[in-house]
Image (cartoon, rainbow, N blue to C red):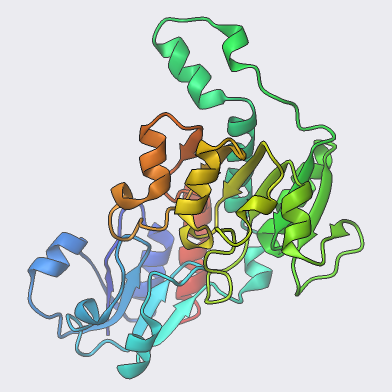
Length: 305
């Protein structure tokens, strides 16, 4: 049995050892090597992260593949219909709730983005790098008594709510699948949009959540709000959101994801707006990318095989 790691950079040494102990031949290759080569006849199991869209063309490289492993909860980088056609099982972290409760990386990154945005940290740092010391140019706001609207009060949303409690914020949420007696539940998304100073998204991407915030409800946003997204780029209608930023309906955006990140980030309306010096912070999908969290996920998921 052969397992091929298509994105091996920084992969857990402990997980590699466990693969070998289980009787697998462990191999590594880059996507450039994979795409430029022929087929990989011996590979039974393929390990991926988020660098490539796993579609029919890639799966054709592995005619005997029976297992695809992605240590992620989001699965929009995988063509699951193509997997079903080829009878390839998918092993991911979705649904592994007890384990995922031990992994706070994405919620921590959400809070880092929130603080960076409300206190103008990237712009202030860049200004100092250029030799200036303009304190009044970067006056921000404090979080105390601000209203945080959390869309999706699942694992990550609840951790973000806990951080907000420590900062003495008012917390409300929209989630049809959750009832929490501690925080105020908004029965309609529009209620949350219209009354939140800061909005943060923590839901899976599917047909019902694509463009969850877009031209159909962008006018409902509280004027001057901040928007944080560490889930998936296509939760936002980026054209509508960029327009709201330009019109000052939205004061600032911090995102770890883009709708076009699997194709070309330069096609993203948010990336384009950032080039025009709009108030946008973009990080390259690093919410879950901490060494300790990734190693723990890689070690956990290989035990599911």
